[in-house]
Image 1 (cartoon, rainbow, N blue to C red):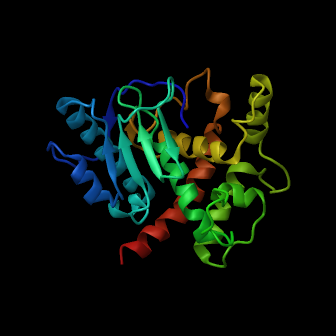
Image 2: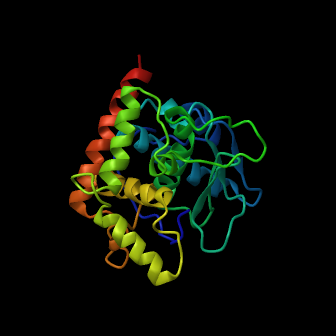
Length: 263
């Protein structure tokens, strides 16, 4: 869940639409999204603008991760909502029960990358880890980052080894024997706030992912991500050198995945 509001400003990246107006139907078809909900109070102008911004942002994600665009929808398991309500001060959130990424109409800018990681983290958990029977009505919702922290058994596969490496590079020290300073700073932030939010593995991974997208991808898209380099919040994110290390781990995982999906 992304809390702070960042106003959309600009984008510098490939021209995927060639100036054409796209629709939410185009988003669904291009990126393999399962279902899309648009709030009844979203007017036509707002809907058109949002469709272009979201299309470009998801296309940027596919480009950054070297994935075919259709893979962004996580095999139809990712649903999208825009302007359908929400909570005060919350830009966006991922609802695991509905597998839905929801963006606020007037405050969603800058949050998409963060929430996409939550969706991916949730989706990949049962693909990468042996988490048992998930058919019961009271089964706990698990994310891959939770499974990593709990040292759950992972399925033997080269891609799963690379996924574990992403968690290792993000949350452990260089020698793998202690927690990374990024984790220590997150714990410190929670103690100062009297909470247990910033140091949750799901949130640390989502912040790390969006920070990498903003700082290392070569694309500027403040609808996709914004605010990870601000002085007043910088300590909540990996530092620049750490972002580069995480970026390389992400590339080692997503690039071969993209190559396999493109065959």
